[in-house]
Amino acid sequence: MIAALLLGREGSAGFPGKNVHPVLGRPLVAYPLMAARASKHIGRVYVSTDSPKLKAIGAEHGARIIDRPPHLATKTALGEHAYVHGYQTIRDELQREGQSVELMVLLFANAATITAQTIDEGIAALRAYPEYDSAVTVSAYNMWSPLRARKIGDDGLLHPFVPFETFGDPATLNCDRDSQGDVWFADMGVSIVRPRCLEHLDDGLLPQKWMGLRIHPLKQWGGCDIDYEWQVPMVEYWLAKHGFTAKKTPYA
Image (cartoon, rainbow, N blue to C red; front, side, top):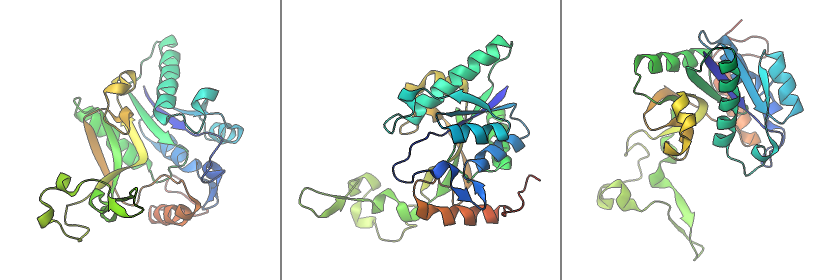
């Protein structure tokens, strides 16, 4: 079986209540839940959370609820460990029913920039290429190339975050944001992973170790997980371009 697992927790320091914040008239978490439910291949949807509100919304969308342990619901807890806990819970449940997990579709409550079509494209890619560990949505953000990244040094001034020599001969570098080619970021829309990625988490590539090592890109634009209120209009724009309004969705 292919199972979807969505993570969300009660607390958020940067944007309190972000997971249920209204976006085009719906709570933010409703969008990844709708995408999972509309997939042609997902058999069950699960929500792992400590939030009563998220549990209620998940249930409204037909999801099964996993109680997220307190030690995995703190601001310092890593999502990767919550994914492993959720996967183990789902795996054990399916084993009791005589079933097994084919793929895990990993979602975040604050990541609305995902559609059922993209999820199904990723599932098809993993079925076609058994050597791939995962299929992950990525968006190109050339304006945020590592070449442009800076840090504030002990002297209070700006310095390169990554040494320029990392990118080649500094004499050939320039300020054109496209000069280094497209810069792809995992935008957290979805990570479709094989069970082995969660069973051997520490073998995966940093910083999102649940993706494994052989990661297939699902290219899109404008993907992001909302951490600040100023991002909401950007996500609403993305949703509108993908057929969402306050009254309708592409799924109905």
